Image 1 (cartoon, rainbow, N blue to C red):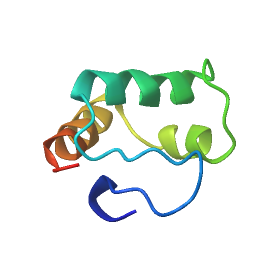
Image 2: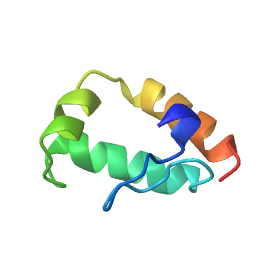
Image 3: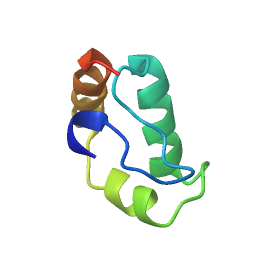
Image 4: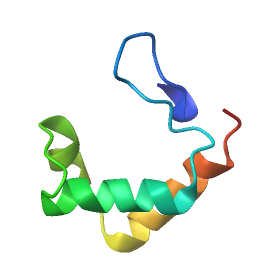
Amino acid sequence: GTNGHAVAGPGVPALAGMDKDELVRRMNAFKSGIRPATVMQQISLGYSDAQIEQIAGYLASQKP
């Protein structure tokens, strides 16, 4: 959802306010294939490590 807020539905976590290091860890797990996914793995492959850090910083700074 917008600014990291989850849309209604089961199994969709809100990213707003999540710990930055945790977000980076999860995105890198998707990118490397350690954490299996269909959509997130493809999306994460399009970002550099620096971009993932920036995205995680932004989402972590949002109010939950």
